[in-house]
Length: 397
Image (cartoon, rainbow, N blue to C red):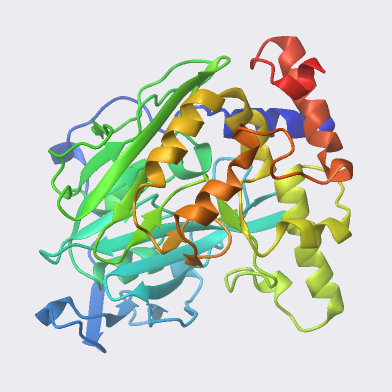
């Protein structure tokens, strides 16, 4: 089991992933999804005419209700709208996948689904920004179920879809999502690759560049790239700053563990002490890849925090590149952060963001509970010995 966790940790965090899809195809060659009957009702406005937030109801050929989106509310759907086939060992394993959509800003919407491995579940998040022209900019797409697609369509036309990382759990849905929005233009973080065979992505895309002023959203959203070689793999993430809302968008750079489970994780949301302890254990296992010491929950929850998995396998091995990236991000004047997992939006600014990365400059910065770190430290040493990833200072001690 430890070896399995080692493989999952190293491959998912160092981006040594089997590529999703086969050969390249042009936008014209992408096929449209089957026609559906989508009814939309305007339920709000932000003084941009038809750009207000609307309720969307997706009906199948028999007139059955398949999904809806309202600000802050959960979605309900029939079995057909939940369908998604997952070819990778990531939860949910069956064909049932729910989506919860929320409006967190007049022009920002988040969509969450379950994501996990074995008996551990967290959430995975896609963020959609409505641009000044009414078009949509999609960050880190999730599974494009009929329900999810209908909710996105209710907001406007998807113009751009961004893969902001080399991470598998975000890379997995990029090609299927583009098939549902064939006129959208794709952009990807640099260094996309697969292992053990380096295969093409399976779709046409432009590579995101650091502070690129030529991208069509440059006047509204700025971007900063970190890229590094980590052993046999390449690792990159692109951070974005939505200027109008003062929002920082990241993928896996930081997280914020809430005291209660996200709405999408129904299994952890029932009333009672047992469910709360299950949520504590699930988040600790997701962060440390080992049997949890639940008293440690209070040490890592309720603050801007770098996941120990990402910290151990990437940032502590690319300290120079990461430090430069973090310092540049902190020059943006953001007051909230939307990551791709756990809680969002996080009420935090540059000071809290910098504090989360103190470990880059000081071994005593951001201390982690040693009991929980034993599995990660053991996996780290194993991968270093095998030569898959370079050593960190802690491995050489």
